[in-house]
Length: 315
Image (cartoon, rainbow, N blue to C red; front, side):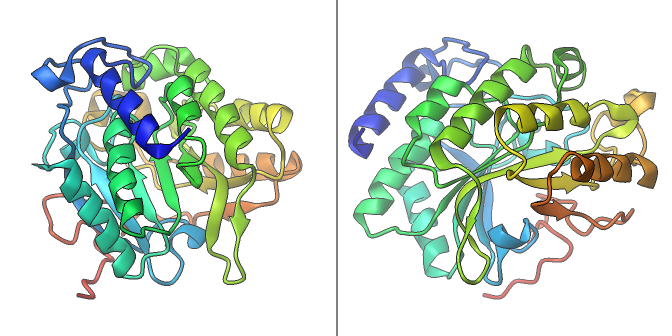
């Protein structure tokens, strides 16, 4: 399907929004508010070359990361809560979003990385449509919390080059309790299958920079709340053990986590390495692990211009 046509169809869906699994059917053009409360115009918090993603995504020149405001999940431990839940950000036009995309390419970023894109797909596709007409030609990254509408993901075939979903839960009950979403397991897994169908495994160039494919993120949560072993079993049985994984140890209790004792702590080294070992024993050999550290330089503060503690402004 041509990009112009896809953008037009997606934008029409905002009249009765069914972009994400909530399917609120509200008119975002008339400022009606659904679960995510997002308007029709894109709202972003920041855009910058980000050096804290996985090695083939950040590479040496950074991933051109655009942090969108609002979210279709309400994770009680969200490290991005300032923008996902407090909705701090700047409303911009589609044309401005396109300019930002092109600017990140001009800065030499390896890709343009859309963070929390699930509720902004029409706006992203419309902006890419404009950018491509101006010569935009680097990979696009769909960096999602996993609560996606598989029918919308299907429409992104040929538009998104790299899918980077965070498969957060293997239990619908856990997803409902800690992220306030229904049927997470079903939607995330259906979407994952579609993503893999479109792009296959992660493909790297001669400099080990990702050009296309799937990279699955797995955030280890305390007390096995994420159920990652079950997720790994699903990937092995339905996709392949050749799927690239990113097993993350960075969980830190923030936002409302203090109200839930079972999740109000960092994970232990034992909890983390149990997952790593399980993945290895089940044939997964491609991907990335994190050093088990307590002070995380990648914890964002979106009220700080530089966002991340490690980040040094190169401009």
